[in-house]
Length: 352
Ligand code: G3I
Image (cartoon, rainbow, N blue to C red; front, side, top):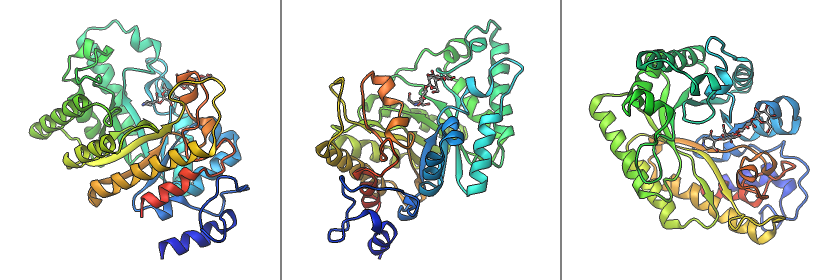
């Protein structure tokens, strides 16, 4: 039934016999498909505001294919709060309007992180009371501004190192390790309806980090600190094993919280080769991993905990990975022209 409908929806891009999306088939448009309609949970993308405004193909794909949106950068501290007494809402509000017009869920990213801070914060010289006020003012002003518009927040991002120790961030240095609990309390006070996540990366390769996150969540529950979800970024390599992916899913499911695969991308250029080119073999290997991740999530995480899966941007040319790694890569389900890669169909198959 589901398969028949997919075939109907994307027929122009499929080979008639196999009903599969061919790697080589020219795909002029994705306008007639809706990825999210084939998925058993919300399907999201992180988006950049400049592209949303200036690239019609990009915003069209976002609105047609996804039913959840995360701002890749527009809701981070440096973007929203560039000077102590200045909040800059324009870009994030643009996204709010887009989400409302197009009926999309908007996930907020991120209220507290050790990166992407404005200089006035990193140079802040106040005592611990001034730091606390600054933290609270930022969180509560932002959450209040988006109350009723942003459904959920990554409250704190990347608190732990990979070995499970607490990252010595500017926040921990100035406020002590328990500041993280107060972040959740401040956010909850400002919008009691918002679903609050702890977001991090590395669950698929670091059991030490999983253990640390699990302990944090249990301690929060015991103290009635309002935490409702766990975000697993899943910036992955295509070589990641089934066992590691399954371990992350089982761990997240076991928390009993909502589970968001919050920043999924699957990179291919693991040897950091300059001039690296995408090809059919890599496309198939990548598709296999996308399918496995979606399947593993869907199988391990109980329905009531499935917050959804978000890819970290849309097309390969939009991805942060090439600039991070310093080499070409192709980590997303759409290519640079927003044509669907085999990973696109693999996601749908994984959700069946
Ligand atoms: O703002 C300037 C812009 O004015 C200029 O035109 C442009 C030229 O390169 O640089 C712009 O800033 C960059 C910004 O992305 C927007 O493109 C920053 O230098 C760059 O540091 C920033 O990188 C982002 C990074 O977080 C830091 O905030 C990436 O796009 C974004 O994908 C990445 O996302 C993080 C998640 O938030 C948390 N998890 C890991 C993930 C990947 O690092």
